[in-house]
Length: 378
Image (cartoon, rainbow, N blue to C red; front, side):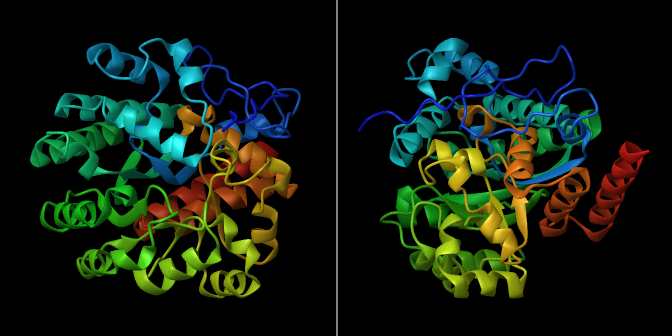
C-alpha cells in the first residue's frame, strides 16, 4: 500500500512556554490549524486555556525524547533511538500499520522504572499545554504480559499520578482498556487487574485497538464485571467501522462515552440517540486523518456531530505519534466549527462536563475556564 499523504501546508503551533521542548516539527493534515496573527489571536487564547482531555493514550503520549531514551535503553527494539528518525517511523500507511508501530513502542516499556518515567513525562507535557485534568487510557495487559509485575505496574502509575498532582498541577485518572487485537485472554486479564488490583486513580474501563474483525459484543461479560465494580464504560467504536459498531458499544457494553465514533454521522437515528441521551463523542481530528479513518480534515464530520446536538469533546489520542497536541486539535476544531474564543471555551467545558471527575473538580475547572475567558475579553 502506498504511504499516507505527507500532510502539509502550515506551520506547527507551539502550545508551550518559550524554551520548552516539544515533538519534532512535522507536516500534518492540510487545511488544519487556524492561524491567528499576533499574541492576541485565537491560537494564543487556546494555548493559555485551562483544559481537560478524555481520549489520550498512555504509551501513545510518549514524547520523542522519551521514546528515544527508552529505545536507547533497549537497543534490541525496532524503534529508532534518534528523534529525527522517529518522525519517519511515525508515518503510517493505514490503521493496521499504526497498531504495528504503536505496539513496537509499547515493547520499549519493560520495567516499572520505564512505566513511572513515561507516565510522569506525559503529565509534564500536559502541564505545558495547561491541561488540568486528564483521563489517560492505560493498557496494563501490554505491560504485564511483557513481564512487568502487576503490582509494580500499579505502583509506578500511581506514584507518577501523585507526583503529577503535587509538582505539576495535573490531575490524572486512568481508563484501563482491553487491547482488542489480543482477544478474550486480554479482556479477562484487564478485567481482573481493574477489579482486583484497582488503583486509586482508576475511573473507567475501555476497549481499544482494531475494530475490523473485533466485534464489540464479545466483550460484554468483561464490561459487565467492570461496571458492577463502579467503573465507567468508554469503548472505542465507529472509527474504522460503521455505525453498527457504535450501536454494539451502546447496547452490549453500555457505553457512557464513545471513543471516536466518527462513522456515527452515517446514521441519523444514531446521532439523534447520542444527542438525546447526552452520550459524548471523544473526537480526535488529526488522529482520524493519520490513520486514514477520514480522508481529510475538510471532510471531518465534527461539524455534523455538533449540528445534530451531540456533545463533542476534542482530544489528541496519540499526540506525538501524530505530530500534534491538544492545543492544535482545538485550533483545528475552531476552524472546522467556526468558533471564536467564547465558542472554544464552551468546547473546553464540554470535556469537563463529559469527564468522570468529581462534581467539585468539574465546578472548579469550569469556573477557571469562565474566568480565563472573562480575563481575555477584558
